[in-house]
Amino acid sequence: MPEELAPLDRTAGGCIPGLLRAYLPLSRGAQAEVRALVRSVPRRNRTSPEAIPARFDGDGPGPLVMRLLGNRNMNQAAVAKAVNVR
Image (cartoon, rainbow, N blue to C red; front, side):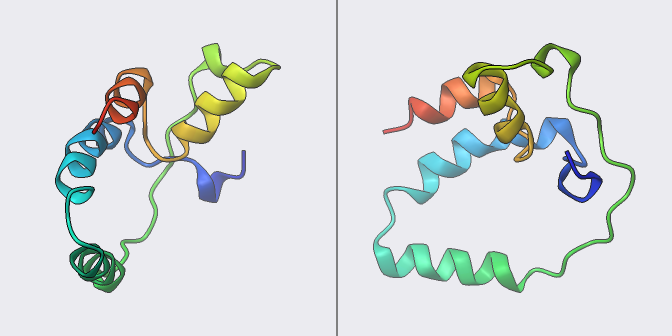
């Protein structure tokens, strides 16, 4: 994986399910406001990225999906909670 795509903080993904629970019930207009706010936040310079865990180094769909989700700082628990958001 290119270093510029590696996650900076592996623990940040734990917040994603809660963010989804708050975001998904919003109207389309409110969701657009949230996206605009997020885009307006200044980006910080990258520091050293964290390595993807070795257990995701493999072939097949499972490790591939987990590496893709790892790019978004989502671990197995965050993925399970996020797919269960209604």
